[in-house]
Amino acid sequence: MVKPVAGAAFSTEKQASRMWESGLFSATRTPFFIYLYQGGTGERISRDLDLGTESRTPITWGFNGLNIVQTRFTGANRRDRTWEPIRNQGAGVRWVIENELFTDGGGNVSVLIKPRVNFLLDGGKAVPPPPASQRSSGMVYLNHKPALAR
Image 1 (cartoon, helix red, strand yellow):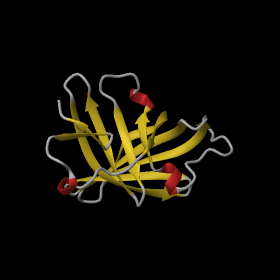
Image 2 (cartoon, rainbow, N blue to C red):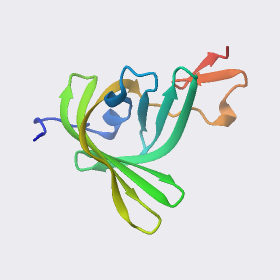
Image 3 (cartoon, one colour):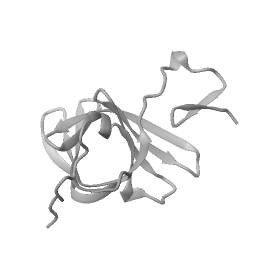
């Protein structure tokens, strides 16, 4: 049985608005990130370092008590991933119990991810990328900072 340690929390929206890397996939060539932006929006980001590709899926998120619930839609289907904080390890790591539920367009709910322990690595403050209309041509945005295209 896993029980939360006293004080385990993401605290406020501002403190939770970070670039979180899933520890479940740390030290892999295909890392997985959740960027939580202030205001309840964010992105799920999957990268393939060998191919140099990245996919982004928009999400919304918010608190349910101390837990963070992230929601994303694919057509009429909904996925809700919950992080229940169980331990803060310094400023850079949060241990959570995470699970994910799938709700189809007809309202049928199934479990996609059974509750499991995972840790999240804090990659720094999450800031949404600038709108496409404000991006310069010939620039590539890495971690939302312009870099020269190679």
